[in-house]
Image (cartoon, rainbow, N blue to C red):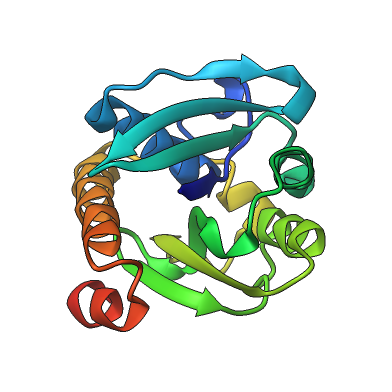
Length: 188
């Protein structure tokens, strides 16, 4: 089983913002796997349960705001006794140029409040993650303002290509049994 926690903010207001790249990935992956999201209020999230090559893939969109994203992980982990080694976190990264993707196996939160919450509730910094670049942030703008902006029209093509490449990379990640060295060599 793979537990994908995809970060974003709930609600139409945030739907197309830079901070919601994780949700955009989740929606595209659920479409590719032919599964639909259902609201799971007791876990504070929406869940789509799919299968890829006989392996269960749970796609999670926390329905708390970004800085509380880890609450969904804690509820799911405790109820289903999920091994943290099955976690794959997908989120936006302001320090990477738009469209760049990076796989990592561990690390700090890098100033990302959603990641900070996941680390707190996972009780470790060691879990696989895919970072999708949304930068660069203009020097005159606060990061919290930048991440809540919608993508500009000319950025949408780059974003679409990046999301498709991230889906391809995720399937490769599954195909090589989460061998991060292979995935990083091919996609980082």
